[in-house]
Length: 408
Image 1 (cartoon, rainbow, N blue to C red):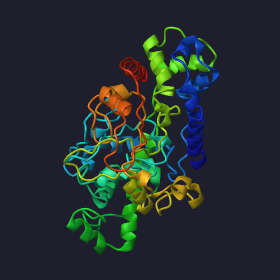
Image 2 (cartoon, helix red, strand yellow; image 1 turned 90 degrees about the vertical axis):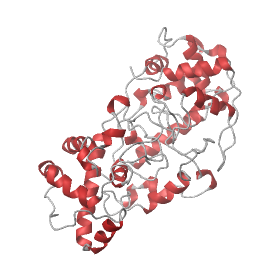
Image 3 (cartoon, rainbow, N blue to C red; image 1 turned 90 degrees about the horizontal axis):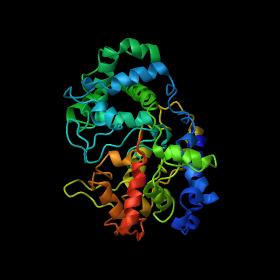
Image 4 (cartoon, helix red, strand yellow; image 1 turned 135 degrees about the vertical axis):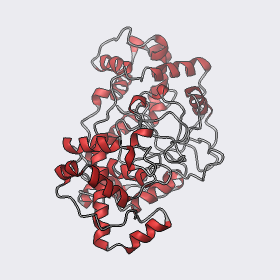
């Protein structure tokens, strides 16, 4: 798993090696006159270049079809929430690219961040906007106990899943645990009552609940692992470029000009590179905070949280050996550049899912492009942006190209 993901990151860095040279290339090199370097860079963004999902050593059930079927059922089950009205699919809507199109996620309450799309997250070494989880299965557990998302607790969830899905659970994970004598509600975090009940439980019972809870996440991850991006008009164009052809009629002149800006003057590939059009790293781009929301330090806090998480790759519920947890072992845990740094989501289908940024700060793609073109200073931390100096026609062309990243 680790080598595959790190190889993807390295490939992204190789893409960036030509950015400064490409940025000086004349607009006259469009269409049939792409340079060899530009052709290689365009080809590197092609969905065909995406390898098979890397193995997840922390989840031995990641590629189990039975686990995926169970995970899909759990993903769509509203009963696994405190009010019986919220499922993972409530915010991750299949018909909306597994996100919800709202500035802030809405579960049993309102969250403080935008719902991220799920497609292609099997390739991400860290999950959530701040990377506070290091696997799909660990990520799936967080919303279940969040007071504003599912609003449940792990003991209640363990009892529900074993009670409702006992046969499927047994097929995937083996014998069913004995949970009948446990409290109805207990967890290390949550209500005062739930925390007190958790503290009163025997250590072995707490471990049993945690084991079932982690298996819930592992089943969901097996399903989410199957959610992948589909081909776009850009991919059709890039495939022709990669094969040395001169594509005609796939992208129009405006979209082709936008592509040249994307890999050149716009510096978009600094963060949005590789077949998924994201580097899965964390960046402060000067996005303003939303008035009324709690302070959000982004990766600065997320890096600490992932290391402390009992469900991380190095934890007792992971199936990985310590040496297989490369991302977690070698991740940067501190530094000024982590302050208000967030993970850039994939740009695939980007024009179809406003609003934008981690708390829906920008209502339209036009507002996003204006922000990146102006590159205002960050109010907190240090922004990586520099003014681009794009003219109105260039911004329009870049927007047109982003539209070509929509799945057919």
